[in-house]
Image (cartoon, rainbow, N blue to C red; front, top):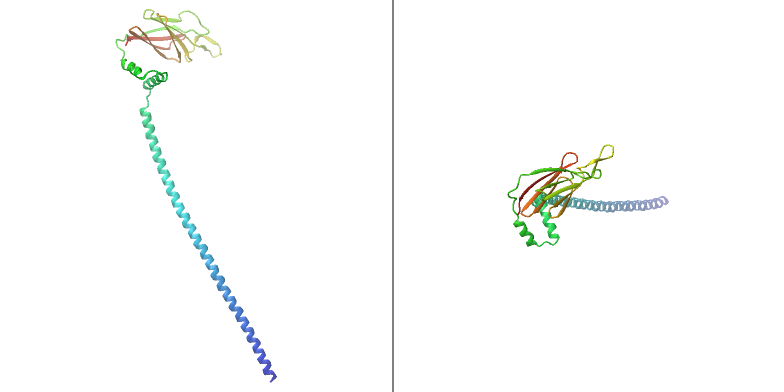
Length: 239
């Protein structure tokens, strides 16, 4: 009888132990399932976020590529337009004699010259007529080391007398010579019989014209043989 009672107590304790073990196992299973589901949802959420970020990056990259393509296209169009404008500008800008005359006109206008008066003067001009054959003469240029004779020359029976001065040439030893240096600036003086004096200064060759009565004298001054300045002159009807 006593054995039966003890066995019953043992069975009850064993049953309670199994129940506790089962509850622990069940709780563990539930916790594992809940943890797995939470982890899965977290991973899935992060995966969706990463996918969204990748999509945004790809979309931004596409937009950036489109912007770069548009900028390159605009740059190429601007470059073509710039070249066209530059070609048009260079084609329309005066050059050579045209630029020289345009600069003279601008200078006169800046000095207050009346536009209509200037236009009238320009319209009244015409190409040279009845010009004489060119005559060439020469004279010795005065310089700091030479103040001697033959330092002027006359044209048109003394109507115009020309003289000039320059800088002394320097030899290989650094000493000044008795002739002028034609590579440096010179000063040329034109004197007419009426006492009018005009001076031109600059590098050779030098071009100048003088109006005397109904005649225009046109001069070209260039370097000649050592010490000399060559003067070529012709005359034409004026106006």
